Length: 424
Image (cartoon, rainbow, N blue to C red; front, side, top):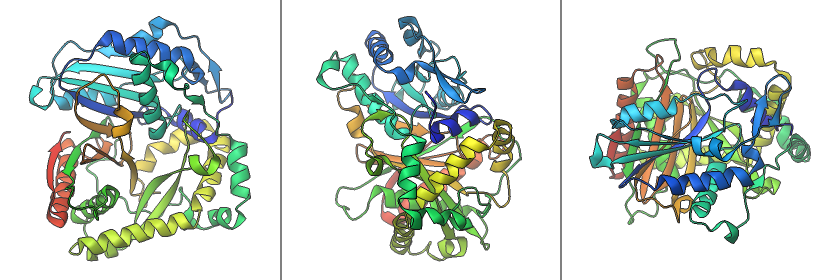
């Protein structure tokens, strides 16, 4: 039951700035059948040992925690008071939990006062120490099958098979790539990134906004991931004064295929720093196709070096060696350091439609959130959703909305798209 290095790191950092939820927020055309959702939750908890553990910080491992059907039922929280979307989102993404005791999966159902966007909101949250965004997608597919009584048609999600030993063996079998950890430009914790201007030094509640960009079918040359990275970088360059330094993106890399991991409930990603000279981003703002090609080539160049094995070794060392008090002591100052380890955490999750096939829901729109200073992105029903996030006190709600509006406006102008900005 000892946790691998990703789980360990997420569990030990939990709660310092925010509960590390991976969250998807759905606006629905009608109220879902709560009894059906709870039936699926009960079945999911019964069949998955990963949902029946709690984190023991002193022993640095997971320990079994009994989960009754009542515990599973209680993981779906129903609100009775109609809320505007900003209030509902703030309540959900700032929900706290006790990782040693509480079920690390939670659903929130709220009636919405701004019903034109969909009269109900359903939020699904998985704690990042249990699984990443990919794992949440697998979990949702399984949940819908169990809700519909089709649990026997597919096998349950396997337990996490990612181990330190497996990662260490893979990294050491690639010595040329793993030795990249000696270079500061390849280390996640190297203080090399430009810090964004901020309105304060206190990291308070999580904030999020969303830009929805409609991708035209007649532009197959325009990939959603290209728009995501280019628009995010453009928004930084439009907001920040030109200066020397690096925009340093912290980007997850999925190791599942290389490590032979299947549909498991667990973490399967490492991360890499992508360094982009800020003056060069500025210089390419008036040439969107050129910016796209350059960013794409820089990301591919870093991935081709295999530096994700070096950063995996780095994270493993930090997770296992650094005392918990050191991790937590540095989490909050790390958001305001100058220079920072990274400018923005960036996660593009790909197309999410397949994770909602068979869902007993009529979905109007989706949003996503992880508690970082950065952004998540995905496509759903031909819409690219870019979800910038920060913390109250570093940026105000209006600053985050202004950043998201800049992002959306640049993408519309650069690629001929239409956009809608929501929140915070």
